[in-house]
Length: 304
Image (cartoon, rainbow, N blue to C red; front, side, top):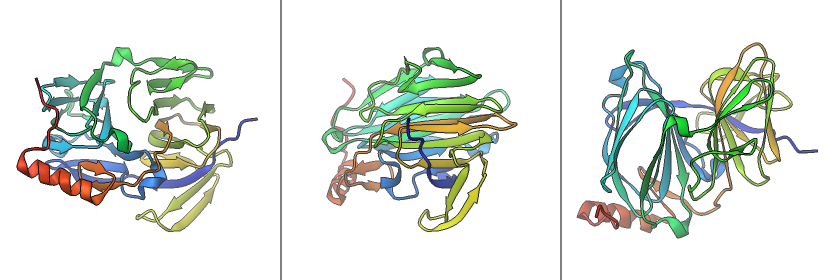
């Protein structure tokens, strides 16, 4: 019998300003990096107010990470130092390997009703790949499989495998599983997760039980000290659930459906030196990166 994972920690995403003044909610990125290793950051940038997102994310550098952006509403225009230009729309994905260094911009626009939104996930790069060549790729909505799993459960498979169907994002170095899952009322969904992998869920519609014991373990705003335990607890929108080890996760709904992101990957267990858009392994590597950026020598691989 498979061991079902229990909840290790629950945290509410928090309002944050990024870029040139974009209002978003950050679900991963405030706590010890070991908790969600190799995932460094998860931003929820959904909004119906153009003033909250139109400032966008003008030109800025990255090094040492990979980013995966998944759109629900509106569009995001991308441009980078490799000469790539593109627009991702509803249901589309872009992922970027910053590697040794890339400079890019991401400029969001709303739909006809002013709605814009999606998620950006950062996956760390292992030390051996920190200075690899940067890359940029797009996947359109119709290339992302929508898998129906009995009892009305539907999963969009961005990366990884569900019911033997593999997602199109296949060459992220940490080989993550990344799903958008909808579970109808009064249904249980189970997903195998290899032992040893980090696993999380982020709820953005509805509510469900994410622990077989129907427990919730919450922590203070800094993510350090235990302060609340609740039994028979439904977890709703803007909650991040981080799991303990085990061989599968099981999520159960009652009268209402739930929609959430699910991510899993093998942790790197390497030192993390992180400041802003640069993630390296040592403070000296960080210093070198910012020194190179100020001197104009940051980009090692440029448009040909």
